[in-house]
Image 1 (cartoon, rainbow, N blue to C red):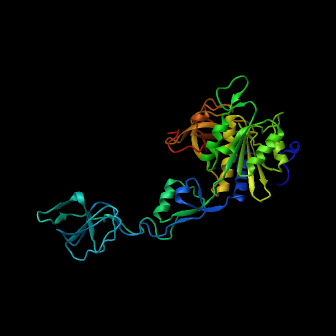
Image 2 (tube, helix red, strand yellow; image 1 turned 60 degrees about the vertical axis):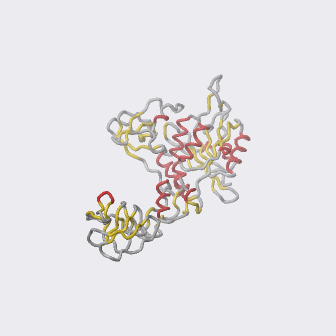
Image 3 (cartoon, one colour; image 1 turned 135 degrees about the horizontal axis):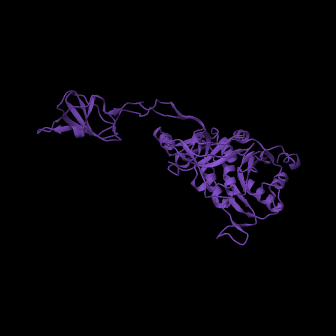
Length: 416
């Protein structure tokens, strides 16, 4: 492993929030994960490692967009055949002829128009009559894209729409960045893993929740990679970190980021030869968050994200440090902030950045400050769409437009 962590007595002042995001994104990009080829059915949530291009024009041939009759010359038309999707039709060679044609079928050579089935009629002797619309009822080759055209750039997150587009282009697999593998270590002897809190012990809320957040940020997290509570001893912390780092690209820990009598994360990182990328951030809540970097004997870079033990602070650390790191590892752009207009006041936090829970109205473009936002509370978080960013030395007033760090919610969840 690399040089030992900086001695805490000489620790630098906390990083500014924007600076911290930039640092962790840069180290993530520098350690971008390998490129792999995967079948389309396996790449949801991955990131394109090469541009998505078309193998043929889109569509590859003239394709009928309605059910009806492909006709040649003036009507009425004599029916000379049928064309279904998936077949290659023969040409229409004589004026006054038509073939019945289904939506999605290839337009036969010689066809001048397509008459919609609902706008046609039949004469007693079986001829087809009607007036085709002036605009052709088919899609032309290359109407959507030319052969070899770049449709999506490197760094595009893969979702079901991207998968469908790739399939329509003729791809069976794509080259993508391997997804980061994450592990979670829960620190704290006072934590219960089942049942209600009581008798001085609190229920662990982060052990069940953090893996779900990590998956939404693009990680793979196996249930066996969630460990804890880890005993409040230095040897137990070192052993747990060593074990998790053997396979994971990122190990998140909860609690122990300060320097109390049972906070062993910093000494454990020093014992493992970690170097800090960020060691505390000038943000409230979540000040004691950290990110450390380790290089193994195999040369592979791993990261440890120290999340504060208070639940809201931990999620804020995920949004502040882990999301930019993972974007860098995946070769994606830095996660973008949205903008919204405050509907209520948000106090400043002096020289620190204040990240305040808000619920977004995406139609109105507004952000509504929430209640129950203490760092140990989750009620406000359960209603939130993100964190409004109130910069150092500032406060937020109704009508102010402010940046918002969005939470990785699924489409249709919360907000308007």
